[in-house]
Amino acid sequence: MHTEDSTGAHTASARRGAVRDRYARVAANGSPCCQPACGGPGTSIDAQEVSRSIGYSDAQLAQLPEDANLGLGCGNPTAIAELRPGETVLDLGSGAGIDCFLAGAQVGESGRVIGVDMTPEMVERARSNAARAGCTNVEFRLGEIEALPVADASVDVIISNCVLNLSSRKDRVLSEAFRVLRPGGRLVVSDMVSDVPVPEALASNLDAVAACLPTMRDVYLAEFRRAGFSDARITAETPYPSSYILGDDGVRAFLAAHPETRGETERFASSIAGAHFAATKS
Image 1 (spheres, one colour):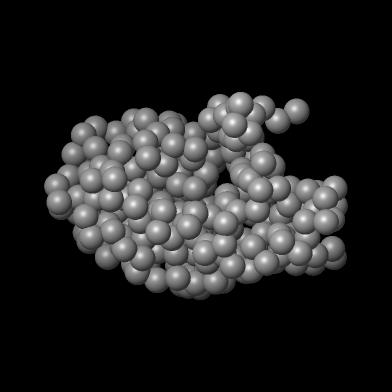
Image 2 (cartoon, rainbow, N blue to C red):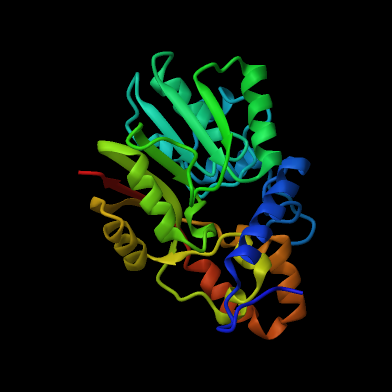
């Protein structure tokens, strides 16, 4: 049974548990969230194809450790973060390490990359990937992005890929991001947005929430500003394939149980984009 509070919304602990369980399974199975049937029965889209569709180049994918790409993102923040040699980079919700390893190559031996993830299975997988690849400038820490295990004003750049929407306390996440950034530091985030409200039926489904539902653009930007960031903006958007949403196991199970919601759900899925956000700590 799903735990909900008196307003009908999921409690933070229930939501956090659902997210942790989901990504622990992904870490163990080594498959993207929409496997095995993105696009409908009898089809399959692997992690490489998912990643190409959201902005990773073949050259980037080729340089990754074998098990680092699980096809979980909705953009490629390292492509637009303008990382420089010697910088310290923090990845919020680092998963198996795909963006950390790409960032590590850009900041070089004089730089440092820290990945934080709350799922022990993901952290273990990422550390194993780093050890096998000999990446000495990348480390992974177990922790929650609402309470980062990172010192004040110690990071030059924060990146994140389709993770902030998973938190029920995005305000706390952004406050923590502001705390650990150095003055002049920047935040570059890829996340899902939509101009269509999340259907109530999906918002009340814990599996769908754990799969990552989008935020309205203006709401997301306002959250950056409330946390103290300046120059918050969307720098680019790419339509997110609706088949990846509709093919998710949890969404398919929900639609099978509630076929009357299919039309609304399909319209909503078609409205989703992967957006790149950028902001600065003055």
